[in-house]
Image (cartoon, rainbow, N blue to C red; front, side, top):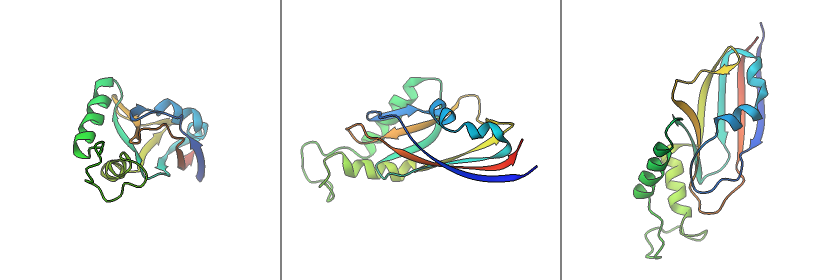
Length: 147
């Protein structure tokens, strides 16, 4: 067996504000996962106003509740009251940076026998915090023993 390290950049579909299950897109973008017997997939989102998370993959309400909860923690300054100093890029930008810092820009998932070793109800989430749809890039690092 040989240990391999590879990196691949891919682009997520343009999705609007909210929490989106992207596990299938990740898998279709990274067929190299099937070649790893025992390893790790590390995904790093190359942006500062969105996030990646590992969370519930079954009930859509979890994603809606998460979006609503984060909006309460870092609300948009829609009335322009000046609650944030950084507002040059729009009223949704600073709250997006706060949410990104709280959730994080990366997720690591074990690979076992050519498949992601997630729990029964786990999936990879992409969380977009800006109002406009964006094209977001992810750098994936795959490491492990080849099958």
